Length: 355
Image 1 (cartoon, rainbow, N blue to C red):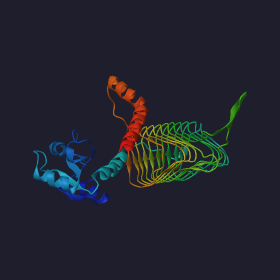
Image 2: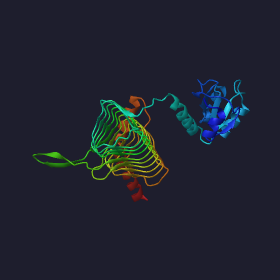
Image 3: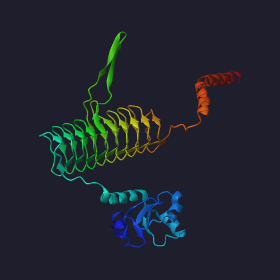
Image 4: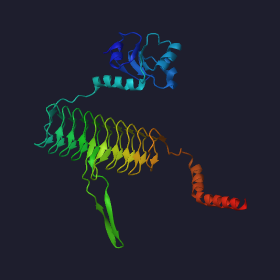
């Protein structure tokens, strides 16, 4: 187990307290014990942090000053890791300790896997049971593909990417290094493209071939049951460092920039371009053919129907919940808004003519 000074040096935090203190893992403030680390990133929890039994706390300088000025009974022997970003430092330490208990995937190919003879699969890869790998597929070093996943022809998956069970990767998909794709994800299915051809007597929706690809950068994580459609003629693009939650729909020809986060059940319609460092809340949705500026934040359940050209803005379009009886009254008012507007216009005209 690491000592406090080893952790401080590895994660570039200033250490206050006993350098040789051995620490065994992380835990929430209310459950942490004397051999564990917790963190404080919100001043609202300062008192809870002061009362915690944690042997070490990751804190900001301001929070350290508060805790030292208001010591608790158990804080005299506590170690502090002082960081400019305690939450990010916690996340990195959590990764360090998680490696101790995370499953490892030994190199090798399960006998039940079906791999085309033209596929390139390095010896360092782990190929699980009932995996299918098509013609022309190229895997990088140490790629792990777990059971029942399918990698279709001419796809490329770069080094150290982990694909969990029952993932479907359609043909021609490109996935970068160190990506994580969770179970049930479908990457590269046809985009929803149909041309109407109707007359008075009938007709049909004519399918538009979806001949583009999905191209995913490095260090991207894709949640369970998320779908990313292939482009119609150009590619659907996911930038490096982007993290996508469960059950997200990304349509054909969408471009998502670098280091975005997209929460669960969000939906992005075709040909929309999301900038870099955007934060997209759960169940939000975007109309097609929009351009969204860098560092845009969209609250959950918000509908974006127009392009956003100025970076750094925060958009919210959610009505708070209310009693159904109150909602019915408000809905009745909304239905009559047009009549109220017409009356106001007539009133303005009558005032203008009388002046």
